[in-house]
Structures are given as C-alpha cells and as structure tokens.
Image (cartoon, rainbow, N blue to C red; front, top):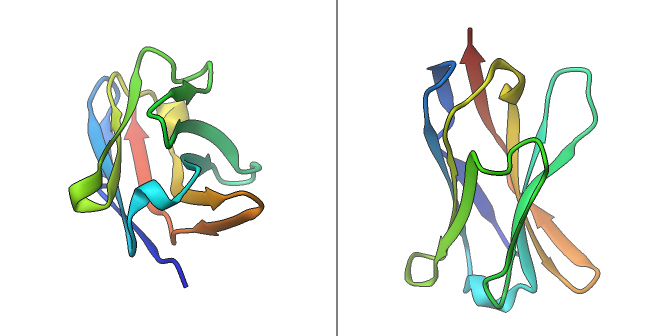
Length: 115
C-alpha cells in the first residue's frame, strides 16, 4: 500500500511563502505522475500542479508563476514551493500519486493565508 505524507503547511501572511513536501513510501519514479490538489472549505477539490515521470510540470492558471513543483528522487519527495501567497490560496493541500488508473492520496496539510 502506497503511503504519502504531506508536511509544511501553516499560517502565513499574504505575500509570504511556504514549501510543502510529500514523502512517498516508495520510489516516486514508479508513478506516472504526482500531483498536488487543494480543497478550500465548502469547495470541491481542485488541481494545483503536477509533474510526470519525465519531469514535465503543469500548473493551474490560478497558481502559475507563483507555485513551483519539483522532486527529489533520493528523498522520495515531491515539493510545492508557494510564493506570493494570497488569501484565496487558503485550503488543505493534498498530494496524489498515480499509476495508470490507480491513485493514492495523502492526508493533507493545512495552508492558511491571512490578509
């Protein structure tokens, strides 16, 4: 069973930065793609960013040019560097790993951005 553990969330003022980490229980290159999603209170979970096994990254329009997804295979970790944070970035952030039609989720980490 794949396990994903997110850390790095917290409380930050608007304009600040946070770096989220997602540590996997196995080699991250086993997965076709690893993604970050987020869910704000009362909202549906939404896509934030992903990185495929080849290293290509994609971003939601709302975070493009502010967030950066990266990875460290030796540490089995995917990161989400979040800069220029806005109050609307407040949400629980989830890591997701996928192989074909199988996918796994972490427990989430709370990010709160104050104005």
